[in-house]
Each structure stands twice: as C-alpha cells, then as structure tokens.
Image 1 (tube, helix red, strand yellow):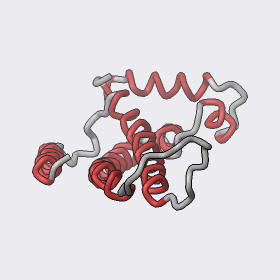
Image 2 (cartoon, helix red, strand yellow):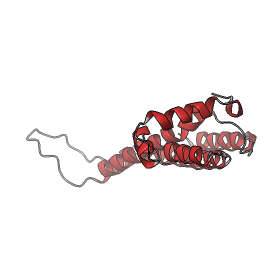
Image 3 (tube, helix red, strand yellow):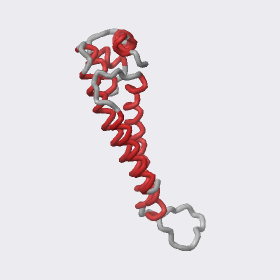
Image 4 (tube, rainbow, N blue to C red):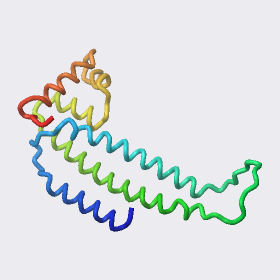
Length: 162
C-alpha cells in the first residue's frame, strides 16, 4: 500500500464517518452489530502476521540443514520491511475503524431502554460472549432465552433494519 493509497483510504474512512449521523436512536442492522466482532478478529490476525514478519526479519540463528547454501548476503530486514510497513498501515486504519465502530455501538446500546436488553447486547457485541455464557451471566439455564430476546428486539418496530 503506497502512501497515496493510505491517504485515500484514510480520507474515505473520514468521509464515511462524517456522513454517518451521530444519532444514537438510529437502528443498527445485525450486520452492523457483527461488524465490530469481525474487525477485532482481523486486527488480531494482522498483529500476529506483523509479529511473524518482524521475527523472520530479525532472526539471527543460522539454518543448519546439511544442504549447501548459496553464496552472497541477503538482507532479511529489507526483504520484509515493505510488507511490515504495509501491514502496519492497514492495521492502523483498522484500529481507527474499530474505535469508530465501538463508539457507535456503545451509543446504540446506551439508547436501549430495557436494562436486560442493554446487558445482552453489551455482553454479546462488546465483550464477545457466546450465547451460553450470556445466559449464565444473566441467570438463565437455557441459552436460547437471551438469543430469542435479542432476535425479537432486533425485529421489533423500533429496529426495522435487519
């Protein structure tokens, strides 16, 4: 990713964020709610990949395989530097998106009037809990209870967008 590509991507993100109304009463779709979860997974994978590339670039041990090796000197750091820089730029952009989505999600959850529903949404989308963990946290034996309440809430008139 070139510097110009990063600037364009940053400008696009800023435009999208500016166009998004800061109205907490705006209904969120199921896709909107899941977006933060997958963005967090993507960030973790990018961080893992950067650490892997940095480790490969700075690895000091010789590879002893018993096979003859080619002559010459290779620049490991230079070999991986461009990849690391690109991944770090993408990671930075995704961290900004994640921060924006988390704020948007928090505003939406705070706009929910029902306290139990607020708790279900918070546990599910901010803390990334599974349905059985949520059920246990709010003292239900069956995981389908909070899941069904969640689905009914999303389908209610107030939350038409699904």
